[in-house]
Amino acid sequence: MRTSRILLIAILCLVSTISFSNVESNEPSFIESIDYGINSIVGPFSDAIVSIIFCSVELFGENVPLVVVWLMVGALVFTVYLKFINIRGFRLAIDIVRGKYTNPNDKGEVSHFQALTTALSATVGLGNIAGVAVAISIGGPGATFWMIIAGLLGMSSKFVECTLGVKYRVVKENGDVSGGPMYYLKRGFEKKGNGWAKIGYGLAIFFALMGILGSFGGGNMFQINQATQQFVNLPMFSSADFVTNSLLFGVVLAVIVGVVIIGGIKSIAKVTDKIVPVMCGIYCLTALVVLFSNFEEIPNAFAKIINGAFSAEGISGGVVGVLIQGFKRAAFSNEAGVGSAAIAHSAVKTKEPITEGLVSLLEPFIDTVIVCTMTALVIVITGVYDDQSGMSGIEMTSSAFESVFPWFKFILTLAVVMFAFSTMISWSYYGLKCVTFLFGDSKKVELGYKIIFCLIIVVGSVLSLDKVIGISDAAIFAMCIPNVLGMFVLLPEIKRDLDSFLSRIKSGEIKSYK
Image (cartoon, rainbow, N blue to C red; front, side):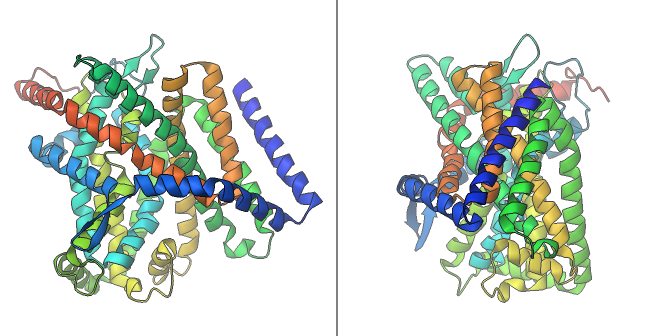
């Protein structure tokens, strides 16, 4: 309760400061001047960082971000080296989520299902709604095919990073768990000896710093920006003051997020295991209705997707350009190889790390192969990508759904707000674990981070801070550099653990509980 009061007081102080300043001067000009000032100061630094992280190489006339190549190569290597674990482990993964091999007495904080939904809540979001539309608008329907392929390969990356997360996690005497790339980079490399410890610790520190920055930007500020714009642009608010509505919305969401994250991963998991199935269910059900309303166009849509994937004449970059768009948007959506999900999956109740690795491979399948494909099919079938009229990604998706449901903007707003909320509470946990890794696991450190995180929600609701978000987005993808490197180094031991686990399942040594 004490933590709740401190969070609420901090938020109210920030709101009163903004409100008082707005009384003394014209509200829009005050907000805009702050936004402009911050962006101007951060701008040069942001542009430099973004250009480094997203630097590109030219392949077949198409500029390809090296970070995407790094993720693609990693996913392909992991898939082949582990003999297509993304396919052969799929059925076993579902059995584990259902609790078939779950011992309720194992150490950990959340169930396999709750760990999965917590990680999904951070990835299923605006990338599934707006990012897919961007990929199709640039690469055509064929980008959908490569997005699916990237999602399938990304399942192997998730398997490796989440297995390592559980294997090298730290479980305290009170049952609290800390895990993720920073732990397996440090502890996994220490086991190898011969100077590997310093390399691993350096990589772990870099990952944690990027994780903190990413949690404030892509995991917070970008989410509240998009949710606020979608909410205050509803017809019922069109005549009201934009800043006041935005600020009020930000305060309400900050308080709700604060109440949830105070309880830690158990509290977060209790929310996400309800929100994720509901929001995915509503969105996919609506998509299915649109698809069946245009049932006769479904075969033609699949034909466009397949043909466009291999014969993309007239599209920038040709087939390679379409492939890159598909892989890029899949990587931005499911974050396979980034390492963030391993932090959530590390809290699972299990003594067998491989079990959670198998559960985690379902994440890119749900996020990319199912939800992203649903969005893509709706856009292709309704034909809105042919008549873009300057529409942005989210506007294009909304227009496609509104062709069947004129009132879809309300459903879309609900989806965006729920997606943003769930992403924020999950990324708050990711950022917190990165903070405690660097600065110690104390109540003061935890409280300080949570207060800052909630205050940023309020600030992000009224300021765009494009340059700040740019740095933060770059930070999220910078996380994949040390993470994938660590996965390559530790991959042989994952293969040994996987072979051992599967043989024990086959022999009956690992017993079934259901």
